[in-house]
Amino acid sequence: MIRSFYRLIASGLCLMPAFHAHAQPTDTTAIRRYQWVIKLAPLAIVDPDNTVQFGAEYIYDQRHSVQAELGYGWHNFSLNGNREAYRFREVWRSRAEWRTYWKRRGQYRTPFGGYWAVDAFYKQVNNREKYTLGRDCADGGCAYYQQIDTPTTKYVSGGNIKFGFQNKFGSDPNERLLIDLYLGFGLRFRNVQKQEVPTDSDRWFFESRDLFGSYERGRSTLPNMTAGFKIGYAF
Image 1 (spheres, helix red, strand yellow):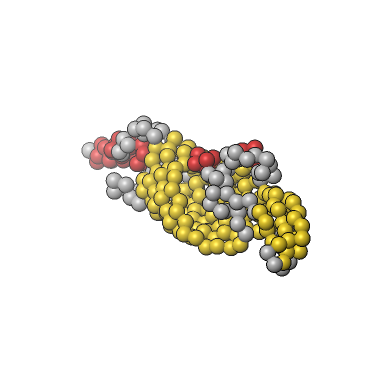
Image 2 (cartoon, rainbow, N blue to C red):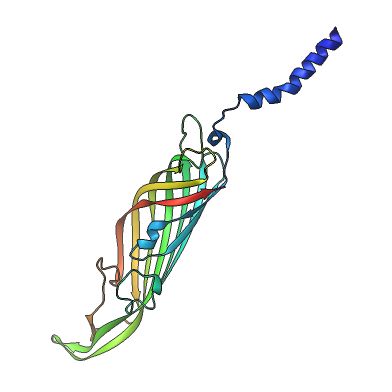
């Protein structure tokens, strides 16, 4: 009798894992844990300083992740119609981000769901531009004018506080393709340097500039807004 009782207890203990597994939720998004998301930023392709930009998000616990992005654009990739003026152009872009995800339906489903984040970004645009420079200028006139071709570099850096939502495409619980939507605000710092600097007796007669004046010499601090989406694949 006692031996039969012990056998029954032992059988129950052996069957507990099976009952526990059967009792788990069938929604695999609640139990599946991804650690990496590889991303593409489509809107970077149509930016005025456009690049091909990829990123990787690493989920290091159930609610936090870090993300890094890197992009590059070359002169033939520029959307500017004046290809001759931008034939030496290249763009480097990078971004680092830290995220905190919120609970969704009472539990963390990282990397799915809403989040807030802080990021820091850096962009460098290298180009050579043609200018007309007045030499020996005085009393409103210049002795002569000179065409110059000078290296120009634009540095942009800054940071944002962002809010976003990341979710998979469709309703398939095993879907790994996802979209990341975000909106954020912050500050950006811009510095444009040109190697050929006029002296007191010289001045720029013509300086090329774009619609936003983003290649005007000098430093500036501006408010920044970031909004967009990325396409990712989780694994």
